[in-house]
Image 1 (cartoon, helix red, strand yellow):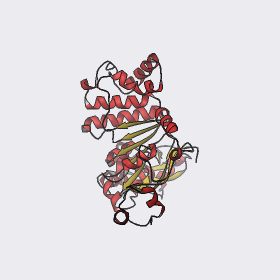
Image 2 (cartoon, rainbow, N blue to C red):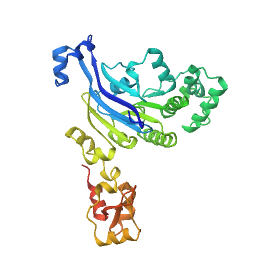
Image 3 (cartoon, one colour):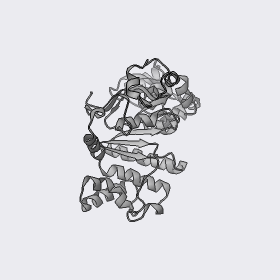
Image 4 (cartoon, one colour):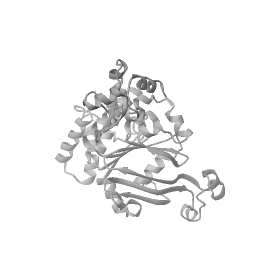
Length: 348
């Protein structure tokens, strides 16, 4: 495993049925999900999925209801046992772990945040947050100190002595997030954590999590059925359909080059300028004006600059700007008002 890879899933299958282990050994892998069910009476929930997640990134698994996304992510933590395939974390095969080692993994290395908050109604906010530390055997003063620290991080300062029933849905989800963070996990798994929240509170929670991730740089696996949420939250996205991964890529790669009609349908309502960067939409041939600006090292635009951030600068100007590589400073192409306007109009 590459040292930058935190999680690697290889050929994960999950069948539901009375004899899944025997069926998978003799299964014709080319059969469709429907054909497998007709021939064997077993349901294929995850079909031969492989991908890797880099240390410190947010990896989004998205798809419609029934696409297999939640089952797949539960296979990663072995809340659901995969029928076949391997899941490795830091070169350790999770699928071969004993019950004791798995318990240690979940207590010390991994935390999960679900759509339904699962808070203890008889415990205060600070007691709920410190629950994972209590299970670990941490002393009360250490639990309180750490709980107060993450409570402030999620914007709940002053609410530590309240009970869950006294909080709004958004605040309860903040407590759930704080509880997951309190144990200082290396890996955070989110199962549609914001889907039950009102749109404004949902956006607020997304922003909060992005801010926390910028500070902590944890490895996050985030499940959602909402493509706009996926492109906002994810460094990489795996789009699932019928138990299989249709496409894996950065938000920009997926919006710029959807691999099939299923993925294209998700991208349809996404304004390209919100996702694409200068390097994706630039002209590769450079005119004298942009070459001159590049030579003078003035008004150069980095290839990874999002179009959204360039609108004010480019739309009011007749200039043609050089686009340079953010790593090497090499001249790559040029961009102007017409290119930006075109990307603003384009949705597919």
